[in-house]
Image (tube, rainbow, N blue to C red; front, side):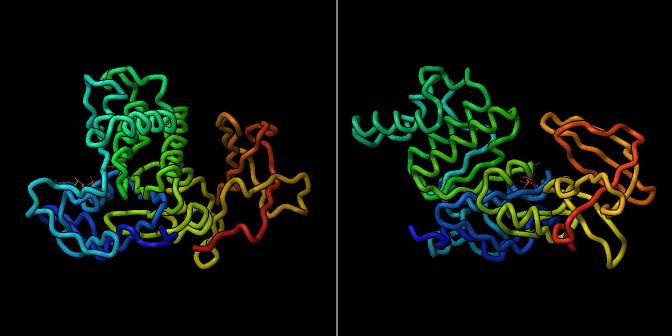
Amino acid sequence: MAKNKSVLRADKVSKQFGDQPVLSDINLELRAGEWLAILGESGSGKSTLLRIFARFLDADQGKIIFNGEELKSVSGELIPGHESIRLIHQEFELFPNQTVEENISYSLRFYDSEYRRERVEELLEVAGLDYVRTHKAKLLSGGEKQRTAIAKALAEQPDVLLLDEPFAHLDNHNRRVLGDAIENMQKQQKTSCIFVTHESSDALAWSDRIAVLKNGKIIQVGTPSEVYNQPVNSYVAELTGGINWLGKGEKRHFIRPEKVKPTKFQEKSKWQGKVEAIRFKGNYWEIRCTNGQEQLSFYRSKKTVEIGDTVFLTYAAKDLGNI
Ligand SMILES: Nc1ncnc2c1ncn2[C@@H]1O[C@H](COP(=O)(O)OP(=O)(O)OP(=O)(O)O)[C@@H](O)[C@H]1O
């Protein structure tokens, strides 16, 4: 499959429910083999867009193009959905009384038994499910259910996998296990994947590109580093991480806290203020300072200041962002 080839594309897609516009003029493409995150707050229209891509819902306007061909309307179909596009909802759709193995194997029921056995073994391995292979689906943890549902969907070798909030309700350890498992499965099978999330850390960590959705409009599409380092507006800047604002009006800039450094020397500093809050974040400390007009936060691996201390801060001009 040629890289950068468009597999699935929304072309000027709009949708409203009653008189509420939910998606407006969406242009977005999923490229071959890529992992695309749709990042947005609750109610921004993420699941609606995913359901339109999955052919469970028709757009009011616009087209969905799959491998170069416009897909037909869903309304005439007896069974909604598309055979090459698999959507995994937040409710997983597993057979609760069947084991993990049986759930995955079910997707391969039309293949001969040897291929089926080999493929189930392969998927159990890459999804990190071997240790629960004989457990009934209803007894699995959220993360295990999510991985089983993805392995089951990938057994069918869809061209496109659509995941609705795959990381929701998972603790940090299980997020990592799931992320690694999807990455393994995706590499092995070269499936193209869209996942929706409201957590910027998941979008930044696990995607090749991020599309930011706000009030039904795509406001930025780019690699995680483009979206994080060159956000198009203050909404994207604040959605994707810690942010400091400096200056006013035309001279207003932003800088990420990790780009701000303390210095011992006042003459080398660009900003001076007092520490007003110190927060322990596990692997670093967040120190927030104020000079009466502005606040500036920075991160340190050790706690070297106390509340009320005067600090001299500096940063490189190249790290200042303009919006
Ligand atoms: N079938 C429907 N009928 C009427 N309104 C709907 C329907 N489905 C979604 N909506 C509305 O459309 C808007 C967008 O919903 P959607 O589920 O796409 O958002 P979302 O970004 O996925 O949110 P969340 O992260 O909370 O799941 C919401 O205001 C929702 O109430």
